[in-house]
Image (cartoon, rainbow, N blue to C red; front, side, top):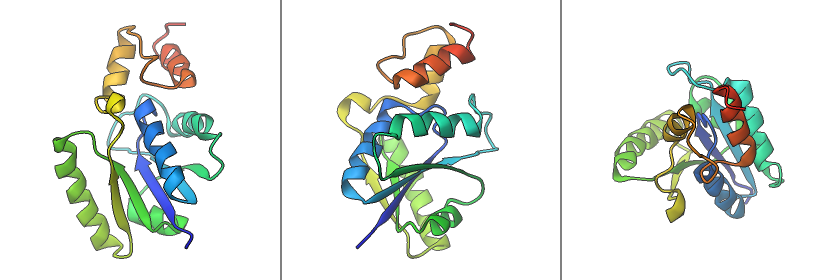
Length: 161
């Protein structure tokens, strides 16, 4: 059975924790779609196009991983992509409560979609995009938390080249 998993998020920016989940999901599913949300409710550091480009660069070694940008409801995007599984990462207990609500809402919107929760490996448990942006803003070293191309783009965004 060819199952497509969709991994949604804002990925602002994509981190080593995100990549960890993508790589592990690519071993479970023959097709993984990384769906980057426009997320107009937030003010992202990177544009949607920049986030898609960064994610595509770090996932290019994984042939059955695709990166797309999307606006609107995840359930609709998942249907358009032919996804049967929504992949979500859980780092903390606080994540669990929010993600359970989202899984229930997505099940209501698309009853044939299942949500799979993956925990990042221990070294990535504490990494979040917002923390990465904060460290980078104040010229901290983020090289252990993001791929090299992302680190370069963070420095460029904060005029630190």
